[in-house]
Length: 258
Image (cartoon, rainbow, N blue to C red; front, top):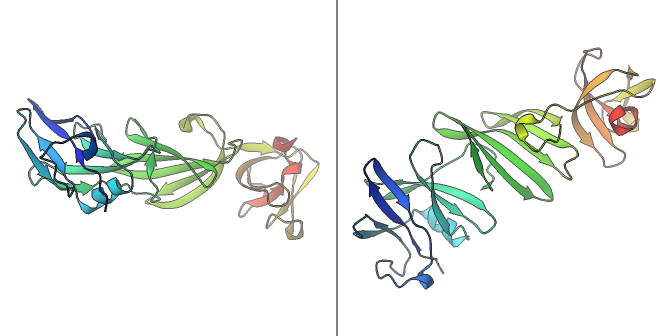
């Protein structure tokens, strides 16, 4: 295994331990304190050093290309974490116990995807990335000492943004939202009926027409879209005129498509 060897320096300050300095491979240094098998150098401000091994997950992250190691205050609480970042700007996080000199993984409760191009905003962490031609923005909220996924926005072209709302790691709501750059400013997407009679459908198919319809001017909230044949929206009537679950409506019958 061709493992990169990383050197990190830890400096002592009066209020505790601060992590500084950063990552380079063995080819960049001949420091004999970094063994050929791969380890991380731990030094105090007087250059007294010891080598410690990363845990298995950190070793694998480095082998997989997450070899840019930096120090971050992940929780905005003064306790630093090791961030292992790939060339694609995706990051995995690790804690270091200064007593046992052991690394451990920092887990996020969510959809299992990497955290990429992240930024921290108060008690929330926002991760943005592209996957299978879609743009994603995941929002995690810090609660009880851990980040939990609370919503995920996805889009292609981003005229329509599909939002999934998470509770305890499970999707509890889906809807379409407006396309402001700031996720916090996005609002549920709405429209109104633009034709005299807009039939409602059980599925996005002309063969699945129900006996219900909406009238011109009726307002709807847009939940989902489908464009395999013609464009359809799964819609909820805002005045509850049509009882029961949301129904599909042809885009051609809505003002948003005019």
